Length: 290
Image 1: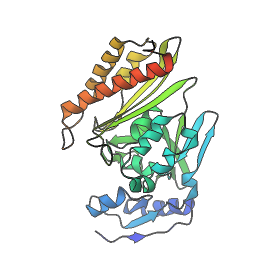
Image 2 (image 1 turned 60 degrees about the vertical axis):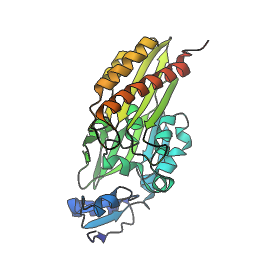
Image 3 (image 1 turned 45 degrees about the vertical axis):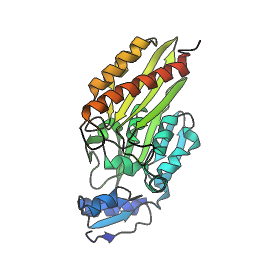
């Protein structure tokens, strides 16, 4: 492993100043669960490492007027237990699905997103919540929609002098459900074969607003826009769920790797989307009740 020099900021302002000075030569260190793997494999060779796990401003949470703000420095274990997310189980379940207890205790939300793996566990839930990121740099900040943030495998809109400060999303209005399902080769410590999140609301016996997002089925995590358009304003039925599943399969563009074939990922995604939508209809509209 190449040697690097640690820089120790006392606060967020010092961290941003270090990034402004050192740019591409520096990397921030939150949990390190992704960073050190990349450094050890020589896929990343920073001259400077900037630890940020002690910066409390990156761990703040709030819930005001229906808007939830999560600090990017929160660990997966912390997100899985947040009281403000009790009615948003898709995000808590996604956080629980990450790696081992040790990885969940160390790895952070910001690191998971900045690594930009197509199979990153938090992406589908946050995409389905229409999340946006507050990105910080010395002297300013900007907001980027999560669907615009990731540009490709391992590639994001983050500039060398920037870090993710927080994750922001609004809870859907009225009654809603938020579901998540991850498919892996085993029950724990598995990289996703596919993962899906559904956030849906309903009124007058019909779906009102439905968001469907999937990971590990394309070069980047994706929103299933065609599926969402199909469902809007429709009453639940088996025909609708089957059509939505088939459409979800067609929206996938996965690879074949050691975990699954392209065909398997497409097929499983369609099955999971259909199942989650059926469950959502049952919870919101009483679909299937005798």
